[in-house]
Every structure is written in C-alpha cells, then in structure tokens.
Image (tube, rainbow, N blue to C red; front, side, top):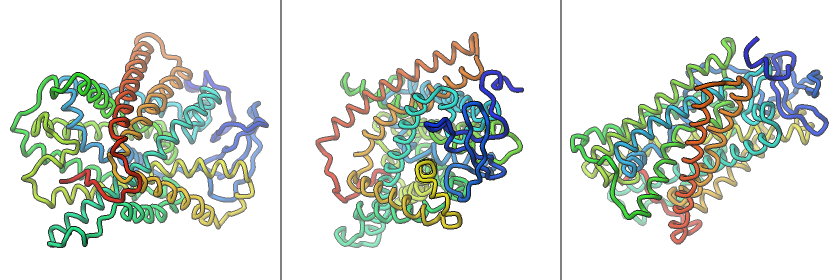
Length: 491
C-alpha cells in the first residue's frame, strides 16, 4: 500500500472517478481496460453500466512517455518564446537569469507533485478537476475548473490570432519578393483567421488527444525549429556583449510595469498544469502512468528551459536593451527566408497546439452531455455526428472572437490578465495543496513548499497589475474586426 492509500477513502478496483451528481453518483467512472462505465456511491460501491459510445474523457491509454513529452512541449512552447529576450532586457542579466532558473525549478517541482496525485488509493483521476474534487472538495473543483477552462479557451483564441498573423506576414513577404503591388496581395487578417478556423474544424474531429499524437509530434518539432532560429540569430551577434546587470533604463513607472510583466512572462512560460493530468491519462500501462511521467515531465520542462535560456541569453547579448518584442525583428541583416521560415514554423505549430488545449475542453463538453442527456450515448458508431456539430460550433465561435481581435498584440493584455489570475491556482497552489493533503510532508520540505507557494502568488499578483496596465494602455488603439495583420513575428 502506498503512502497515498493511508489518506484517501478506498474505492474498489482500478476506477476512473469523476465528481458525484446530486444523487451521490459519479458522472464519469470508467475502467480504462474494459470500457465499463458506472456510478460510484458515497459508500464506495460500484454499479457498472456499459458505455456504448466513445464520447467523453475515458481514454484507453496507448501513448508512450515520449509522445506525452511531445504533447507537453507543444503545449508549453509557443511563439511567446520569441519575446523572452525582451523580458530579460527589463530584468537585466541578474534578475532575468535568476527568474528563469527559479521559475523552472518551481514549475518542475509543482508538475511532478501533480503527477503524484493522478492515482490515489486505486482511484484514477482522468481530469485535473476530478483530482481536485476528490482531494480538496467540490468548491475547490469548481474554482479550478473555471480557471482551467478559461485559460484553455482563451489560449485557443490566441493561437488562432497568432497563426493568422504569421499567415499574413508570409503572404506579404512573398508578394514583395515577386514584385506584386501591396494592394493586390491576399493578406487580409480576418480571412487568414477564417482559413485557420476551417483547418481546425477538420482537426477537431479527431476523437481525443491520443489520436492527435502525430500532430503534437509535428508541433514539437516546429517549436524547436523556430526556437533554434532565434538562438542562431542571437548567437550570430552575441559577440556584441550587450545588455546590463540591472536591465534597460526607463521612467520609474514604465520600469516597474515592465518588470512586472517580465516576471509574469517568465513565470507563466513553463506552465503546463492545465493539460498535464489530461496528457498523463493518455499513457499506456504498465508501467504506472505516474512512473512514466517522472520521465515525461523532466524531459519536456528541461528541454523548454534550455531553449528559453538560450533564446533569452543570445538575444539579449546580441541586441541589448534595444531588443524588440520579437527577437526575429531585430536582425536587419538576416536573410528574408529566415523570418519566413520562422513564421511558417509558428504557423504549423499553432495547428496541433490548438488541439492540445481544445481536446480537454471537448472532453468536458462530452462528459456534460453524457450526464445531462444520457441518450447521447446511443450514438455508438455515429459519434462523429455529435463531434461534427458541437466542435464545429466551438471553432466557429472562437474564430469570430479571433476576427474581432485582429492583432495578436491586442489579445496579449487580456490573455496576460487571465494567465496571471489562473496561473497560481492551477500551476502552483492546487498541485502543492493536493500533494500536502495526500502525502503529509513535514519539516524542510513543507517549508520549501509554502515558501514557493507564497513567492509564486506574489509574482501572479504583480503580473496581474502589469497586465491591467497593458490593457489600459492599448485600449485606445483597439478596433474590432479591423481585418489586417500586424506581422508580429517578422520584419
């Protein structure tokens, strides 16, 4: 019996547990290996019921730990990595490097703690919110679920804007290279967003995250690709030896808000908690999923840390305090094909990255449908009809919102605010709180957990302040459905 078994009420068998309904029954109990669903009463008795369709969040568990690492890398690394040198410029060599290392260590520790509560006392928590429910209670599960899904939904919208932005930039550069008049080029941001939305309607018909493993592999390769381009550009001029210990000078208020946002950018850059448990549920067993994740999480986060550190250091050393918001904007002597390639890789990465965040949202929607309308389960063999309907609607709605916010920079403030508000509870507080509730740590380990929790809470508060200032500063320039691209990832 594991240490976790001593702190949880036993549920017989290898069950997948979701929160009970008003009658005391769980809504999503499924044995991974027999496809049996049923209800678990508060006394622990199991009433089995065979699920006919493949809808819902029950997975068979076929992925390897390396595939799971690919999912996490695809989810963690985004086009935001190109802006890390600018964040380092605000904090300087000392503060920036310390922040990068510290946030990596805390994020890795918290993620490993979260993997340790995936299976507790024989109960398999297929979803993050279910783990919080059974360990912390219904109120905490509601808070977590709202924060988690708000983050995932807004992230998918942000990815649509980023993809359309890259598409628009590529079209403009190709037109210029061919000598075509600017007015004759197809570069409309709104149309690019709609095209990307059409691609996502097709991709969203994949039944679950496991089925998207190949897309995540491509996404991980693309994220590595444009990160390497950023490193190469910085390394080519790193001999300039620019940058300063305290960061770039600015008016006191500007410096303060700049540092607040930089801390948030570094702190949130490693976050994968909102999809980590869902990714863990795709792992095949044996070995135990928690054991496999001990390789998956360090591999994904260490890879991310190395890339972040290299991009930040090379970019800041090359361009110093003048580093732009996207590192590929700062090298005028670089060939055009370099920025084109970087934008193409960002575009390709956005396709699977959207799915990594959308698939858990789809699973939640299907769980709710199965609970509120059990007859949906009769669509066995025709699940594609259900998915085609509601998933297409989801993509259409997010596409309309993305069209209304046509510049990636216009969305940064809102996403930054939501990220600041949701990062601490989802990535730090609940992993630590659940680990403490299950494993009862004491002594220096407990003190270190509490200290990390408090520090990251302060960082989240400061980042929230910075995000609010960003929203206020950019509000006067916002024009909905403007329909033109900004080319945020290139010259």
